[in-house]
Each structure stands twice: as C-alpha cells, then as structure tokens.
Image (cartoon, rainbow, N blue to C red; front, side, top):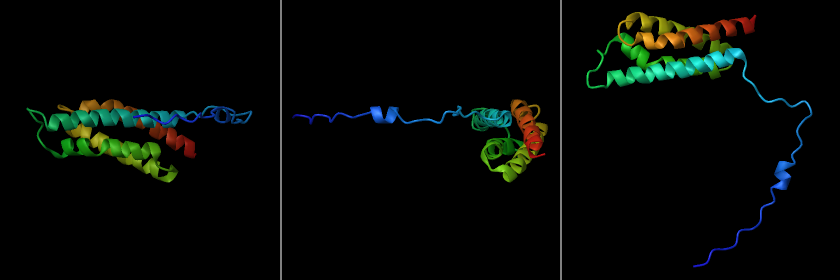
Length: 132
C-alpha cells in the first residue's frame, strides 16, 4: 500500500500577518485576576467537599454541606465571566453562600472555603470600585 505524497504547505503567508504598531499583549485587570483566583479556590474546595460527601466515612448531608458542594464555583464563574451588571450580583450571592456555608460547617469542611472567600471579597471590592 502506498501513501499519497503530501502537498507542500506555504506557511510564510501566515507568519507575515502585520500587527498594529501599538499592539500590546492582552492582560487581565487586577479585579479579574482576583475573581479568577476565587473561581479556582472555590472549585478546589468544592471538589474536596464532594469527595468528603461520597467518601468511606462521609459527612452528614446537611444544608451547609450541600450548599458548599453545589453553589460556590458556578457563582464564582458567573462573577468572573458575566457582563458588568450581573457579575456584581453573582459575586454578592457567592459571598453570602460562602459565609453561610462556612458558618454552618466551620468544624468540618468550611475552613477550606476561607481562601476563596477572601479572594472573592477582594475581587468584589475591585468590582465596586470599577463601577464608581
């Protein structure tokens, strides 16, 4: 069995696309960085909570464990990626969820969410300052 010969590909035209003289690399604002950090931290703590709920010695399925297993990462994602009027509301809702969940599960899993709460609080203050 023979294989057809590959046609030569000219990549010189793709490499010669002109860029504007004042082009700068895209950078995220400090507020967005804090919100992305909150998203990653909330997601990690949420995975720990889910693992604790389905482990060999599981947590009790209570309101705070279900709240911390379901809500923080999606709300942090909405705070990080939603448009301006919605992201402030999502950040506020996530702050309330985290405070309530941490208060309910302070002796069990709640402390894993404190770094996400801090990052989200700093990001929320940044969102508030950007609007004024």
